[in-house]
Amino acid sequence: MKAAVLYAPNQPLVIEDIELDEPQANEVLVKTSATGVCHSDLHFMEGKWMYPMPVVLGHESAGVVEKVGPGVTNVKAGDRVVIAFVQSCGVCDRCTTGRPNLCSNGQSLNRMGRVKLNGQPIMQFAGMSAFAEFQLVSSRACVKVPDAVPLEVAALVGCSVMTGVGAVTNTVKLQVGETVAVVGCGGVGLNIIQGARLAGASRIIAVDMLESKLAAAKEFGATDVVDASSGDAVAQVQALTGGGVDYAFEAIGLMKTAQQCFEMARRGGQAVIVGMLPLTEQLTIPNAGMSFLGEKGIVGSYYGSTRQTYDMPWLMELYRQKRLKIDELISRRYQLSQINEAYDALKGGEVNRSVIVF
Image (cartoon, rainbow, N blue to C red):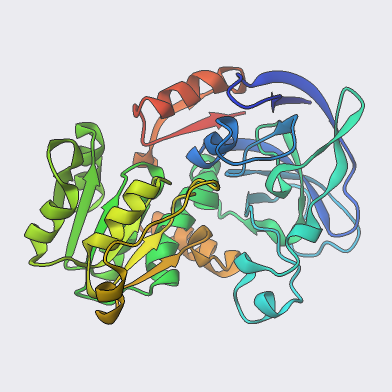
């Protein structure tokens, strides 16, 4: 089958033929229908996060079940599924208390040797390697997709929608009337905005440096916008709110913007780090003593604190009810052979979200 292979950081992806094993116990072979072009993969492509290479990246996808291995009962051949990129064992203390995104055994579930390139085994990224025509995944990662939901829509539920909406509804459990700032209005940031709107936030302030991103933020529910290229973003947010917001969400993955989010939070408020911050840098908390006396906090949000078998069906139902914009997220569609072009558009800020269609 064809797949997009990354051989080294800061190199173009190369379309190659790879080999994939048959599904074993509790595994599912999925024919990929759509895969999102996500900024998280770009972190690995640019060397900001490390992973054994060569590798087939991709972690935001949906498709049709081709085969199932022994013991699989939740899906069957022909089912349409969205695939969660968290690997959860189902039996550890995190999984059994409703926090499978933080599975204690996640690393031990990584599969080596099930994907081969030129006869040599390579690691399977996020238990998926979704930039490929087929994926071998855990049955626990598969969630059925209703007939009324297009598979390219379901693919985005698999990452950007779940990550953004879940950061609001699951991680911080936003209350009606609370105020929000969202720094970075790409695919995840727009879904944080949607989540805040659905939860009843009284003020949703979108912060970005691109006019097109701020326009999209308004479409998705922002009540106010701040152009970070035209002045101090923190001061602008504080001026709009009389001192800061209850929650400031970082959706880019930069230390500078993470620090800004902490400063945007009011007394008793929180900075919520959704983006993937660089591994080699440290976050500095300004005026930490007074900030903590004011009960300000900072918390991470991983994958929207997802419980995929519960959360993803209701997100798709909100889409069906036209309460959640997902069609509008998709700015462009590409073929797998155009994947480098798709990432150039992402880096240039030209899209909300692009989808590779198979």
